Length: 241
Image 1 (cartoon, rainbow, N blue to C red):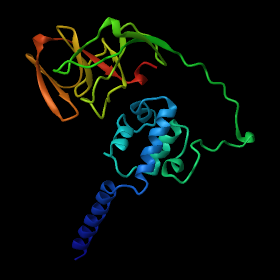
Image 2 (image 1 turned 180 degrees about the vertical axis):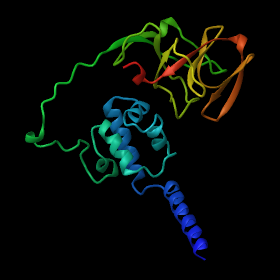
Image 3 (image 1 turned 90 degrees about the vertical axis):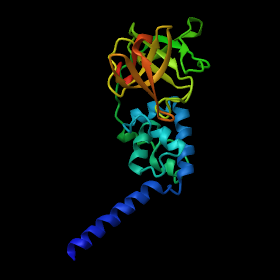
Image 4 (image 1 turned 180 degrees about the horizontal axis):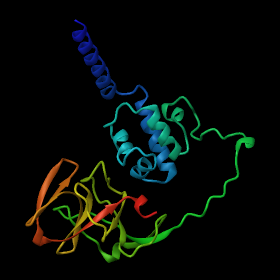
C-alpha cells in the first residue's frame, strides 16, 4: 500500500509541474510588454539580451511569442540585470523600470576599462529569392561598429526572414566567421557556387549532400555537395570579445 501511495504522490507532483508549465502566468501580458519595452530601451537584440542573461539565445523570443507561458522570478531577475531593472517591474508590482540605486555610502568607485570595438562589414539583406537564398551584394554593404575585435574573416548580415525563428528573426544581425569550423547541429551561412547564401542549421554532411534545416516549420532539405561552395559558421558575439 505504501508503494502505491508513493507512486500516486509522484504522479500528482508531476501533474502539478506540468500544469505550471502549461498554465499562463496571470501577469503574462504585462511581463511581455515590459520585457519588450526594456529590450528596445537597451538597444540590444532579443537574442543578445537572452545570451547576456545566461538564459539561452531564444528565451526572450520564446516569451514574447507565447511559447513560454510561465516565466519564473529567478529567470526574470537575471534578465532584469541585463536590462537595468528588476523582476518586480516585469511583474507589474513596481512602476518605474530602473532598479533602485544604492545609497551613496554603499557605492564603490570602480574604474571600468574602455570596451574594445571593431568595424566589420554588414550586408543589409532585402527580399530573398523564392528558394530562400540571397546574394551578398556589394552595393548593400556598410560598416558596422560593434564591441568585437576586428577580424578579416568576420562579417555581419541582417536576417531577411523568419525561416530560422525563433533562433534568428527578421531584422536581427547575425555575425559570421568564414573560417570557423561548423559544428554538428550548428548554424551557418550556406554559400552556393553561384555565391548566393542562406542561413540554415546544419543537420548532416555526407559524401554527396549536405542536409540543412529551417527551424520555422522544421523542414529539411538536401543540397548536393557539388552546388555548395562553403559553410560559414554563425557565431555568438561572445566568441570574438
